[in-house]
Image (cartoon, rainbow, N blue to C red):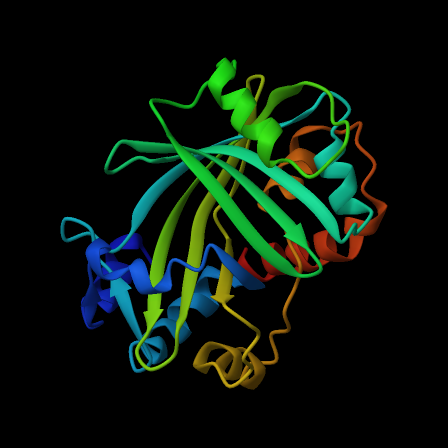
Length: 254
């Protein structure tokens, strides 16, 4: 089913604008991720209209994003994620392509909670300017991570849903692709849903929907998956089960 068909389903959702999003920014939050196929997503999307409003910007409910990730030269952030460190970081530029607005973001994950800090940026800088380096240095919770370099570009489309009766956001990412140094990998069969809550609430309508469909939460990083797809030299033993699950979704979607 095409994006146009998804748009048709989203037309039945009650809409919410950017000005109404302040109460659900949830910059300090708990994230719970789920993965499934685009076909499964299209099946469950009408059910979500009963419980969620859809963010609409200039009448559009599907937004295009581009992210440029930074890491140390020895991929410290990637490796700390693979080691399942409770205290880990992510540094990226994110551009909202439809509105041409960009931010430099630092995400700090500690004991299951995510705290996101960000500042506006004119563009996605391949070489980070000094004031941005200073912001990262003030934000990163590592004693010595060395200098950071750009490592990966990620493009995708996102649908943002906001709970009717519960303070939570649900983002749905689709049409993912990763690129670096002339190499590109497309994963348009995969959908990544991320439930953002101030604390884990399993009575959430989306939690219940996933439980009914026997889709379990999965800790997954788009950045890490992209690095694995594009760099054959990295070690990723602890990601193998997740990659097998992604491969199964791909096979079933073929």
